[in-house]
Length: 387
Image 1 (cartoon, rainbow, N blue to C red):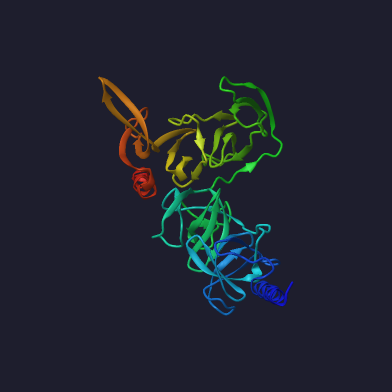
Image 2: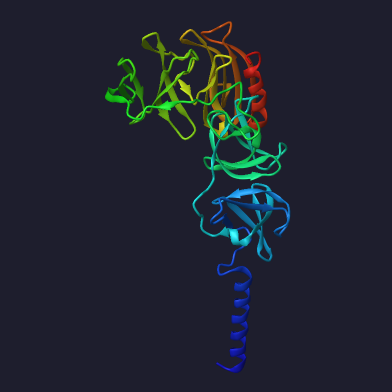
């Protein structure tokens, strides 16, 4: 190797050393995904400027993923969560994801049965879906502007902090509980006297349950191999009833009620819902039970129904649906029906005057891509005159 080659090699080595000193042993790239790592701390500051004394935009929990936007601030990295940007000290970011310190929270909107999950921390930012009352989310970050960065399933986004509560008893950061709706406050039976005794025609298991307090034999069907059994006063009469899980999915939990009547339990029929109550929410003051299933497209496909107790029976009041629209047209003298995946049909049915079939009180056919904006109008029609 001649002198020129040696000099070039030494210069290259010095340059690499300088890059390593400036960017760390593992040089990051703009656009790379990094993770908050507070080490001994559960959460770290997300700041407005790249220095320690700058205003804190909020706190991000260890394990939260961020996108690297810039390296040009010494020990501070300019990063992004959703559409929000800020600075985090490089010492609190890592390439590998540490154990998540994100706590859970319960969603509750006193004026609706769901809350928008938004791309940014503001009501004018795009909705990426909706999260139902009573659903559990992971809190990834708490911003100082009244918004919280959360994760629900595979989706992450922002939600107004006053729609989140820390426990199933209704405690929130901004008020001491809620008056209209109540997260199911169930007590799970740890070792229920439960046995699978056969199979139904559709393949579901047939289960025999011995009630824990009076020894009554009860039967139900369930898709679950080991169905959960709970005690809860679902009809607000002061007596503990039994709730059994008949099916579980990613977003849905179907249940059946056995209501305590004097000394015995009575199975509760659920009118108009083929699969029974789904992810139910109780409204003690109004004696209501809400059922809502998420059938896809971030909740755009759904079925929601609200019932009022009459004795130990449920009376349906209103039902709403979001489903794929069907185009019907005549061709060669025949009526053709074709599903249109680009369109969403939103309906609301009232059952006050026609309990068996219902009366259509709201209908709107919209583009699926614009579903979130139109679901608000359907929701208003659904609750009108009930609360």
